[in-house]
Every structure is written in C-alpha cells, then in structure tokens.
Length: 314
Image (cartoon, rainbow, N blue to C red; front, side):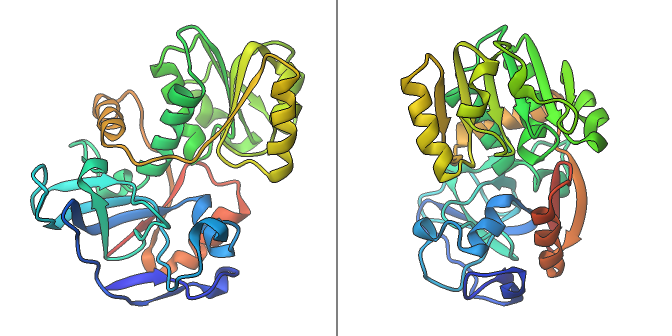
C-alpha cells in the first residue's frame, strides 16, 4: 500500500511517501480502506522525536491519528462491522492512518454519520475525542459553568467550544487570534477574546473551567482567573508547567488535569449523534492529497490554521 512514513526522528524532510506493508487485522480489529485522515500537532511532535520516550525507536513509523473510510476486512471476533461499512475512529499507538489502509479496534470504531462526507469525517476522531474527554471527564463540566477555551479556533478548540454548549455550560469564552474571531462566534462562543489584545489570565475569578487546547498557558499563570474549585485542563503541558502546576494545586483550591485522548467507541457514538443532529460540526480549512503530507506538516507546525488539515487518500 502507499503510505506516508519516516525512518528516523527529525524535521519535515524525514517524511516519505511510498510502499509499506498492508496491515493485517487481529481478531478484534477492522482493516479500513482509508479515504481521509488528517494532521494533528501530535503527528509532527512524534515525527520530531518530542515523544520518543513513549513512541520508541522502532521504524518505519506511519503517522496519523484519524481514520475515515470503508471496512475492507474484519478480524475473526468482529461482529459489529462488515466490509463496505463507512467507519471512522482513532487508532492507538503512533497512529498509522496516513496510508491507504489502517487498523481500528472494533470497540473504538463508529459508523460515520450519514450527513458527513469522508473529508469531514477525517477531521473528527482525535480532536473531538480530546475535546469531549477534556471537558466532561477531566474538567468535570457542570451545567451553568463558566468555561474558557484557549485556542478556540484550532482543531480541538473548535470542537470544545461547541461541546461546552452541548454539555450545558452557562458561558463559553473562546480565545483565538484576530483572524478567527468570527469563526469562533459562529461556533457558539458567548464571548470571543482576541489573544493579542486581551490576556484572559487577568479575568479574576471568572471561570470554573479553563481548557487550554493550545498549550499556551499554565495553571500557575491562569489560577487567578479561576473561581473557587476551578479546574485547569491541558493536553500539551511543558515539563516546567507540570511541576509548577502541581505546586499550585497544593497551595490553592484549584486543580490541574493533564491527559491524552483515549479511543472510545461509546464516546465516538455520542460524537456521531451530535454530528448527525447538527449540534457540532467539524471545521476543515485545508484539504491536501496524501502525497503532500510534508506541506500539511509544515502548515500545522507554523500554526494559525483554523480547524483541521485533512489528507485525502486516493
């Protein structure tokens, strides 16, 4: 099969597109003919070697944490899916979705909502799972909470703004760059702040939950903006932020929560229901063919892209 891959950690130049073995599904896995996947910041962080303590040194590695396509084959124990079904989900490990074929577990996969194209579905799994689990599980969002999403126009943040409303937040504040203010308003944010003009960390005792989807702040910097028993959630902490955030939780009634999204069939089913109902929608800003994955990584690393960069697999 054709796949994007790299044989060593490093800059964009280590990426290749060429032949790789087609994976074989295990007993509880499905083999998906990939029609669309995407690029997330975690993909180029893995490629750079930033996470090599977790990802190891076995090469080649095929990046990609979003799969949308059709079932090509199923493992012996799979009963829920059959060849031809339109499915999507998030592969485990390093990923492997930036290729013609990829594996999903039966328990982590879901049917693509009828109203979504493969292109739209390819933008969903990792970002939507991250947003949902950040707000509901780690942020413990309650009805009426005041929620702030930092990085509200990004892949994860754009879902988080919409999901915060769906989960009953009383006020949703979105922080983004000046070119994406209107998009964040359209996604349903109650308040929209231009990050170049407004420092949300100075909003004293305003928020019950801060979800830093952009990884640009820290609990230490944000704690004065949190109300009593406020929660700070992030998926991309830096080492100093972990240490200082831990100290900050000891000395206050605020809490810090750091996590990486996990695959979850039930969560994907909820996300699918919201998508089908029009409660949430993916934001796709750029679509490129798989052969242009280096350009996709470059755009993602440079930042400033709203929503997701989707790769179409021919």
